[in-house]
Image (cartoon, helix red, strand yellow):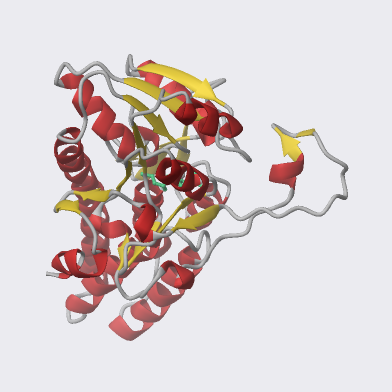
Length: 343
Ligand code: MRU
């Protein structure tokens, strides 16, 4: 299963809006189609949208007729600005497209055909790096997992959210590979059910023992001592460790604190935004109210009821037991420990 790849000069993604009913691959071969695929969550999860956006920059530039750098750069700047608007919270998106900008600037004296090749190479490098990074996080994180652990996760931070193994789910896969007996619980993750549709499906595909729960069952499970650890991904982590992730993550962190359960965030360095002092500065995407009023297009609530639909919430750093990255496992005080990441 390959969530995102570069195939025959197109981006091939799994259309995640159609899972688990059907596994459908779609090809994206224009800038606009990439923007829509990101916006509509056909491709989703912080690392995967970073990769899609980076390849999207190339698609937006490959037919650029400019023969001098200034004209080329002006188009590049608008392509990057356009893609950044698709989804604002996951910093991996802007991190990836800014890497392509840097690449172009570093080769500003080259002819524009060569510049286009550099953009593609950099985007493919981001894709390859994500694979390596997933494996490293999984290996490091698996050290925290004991045989017999019952692990609760939220949203989908697995292979469907990355180019390879996933972040939080990667840790589970690695622990299982090491022969540890793991039982996973997946929150359904309203409003659009990434846990029910994607995580439950993905874990079953990988042969992990998974039980699906409604979001409002997590507290009861914890009270019954049926959860040993919580593993989640991240969309943006501020310099103090505050972490934005799928709406509902904060609920779990509060519950974990009350029940004395370790709460771990698993995320690559590309999910950190050390320019932000705290989570208060993280932009939170607000999405269409229909996602809350409906499930799979079926209306569940009054058609005109007002809806609050933030796609993410911010978990305060003090509720996070550790942040697992490819560069190591970081603990409080995050402001100091995360500085290492800068180096
Ligand atoms: O809205 P989504 O489905 O893109 O939200 C995804 C999440 O919140 C994930 O937990 C996060 O991106 C980490 S994925 C490794």
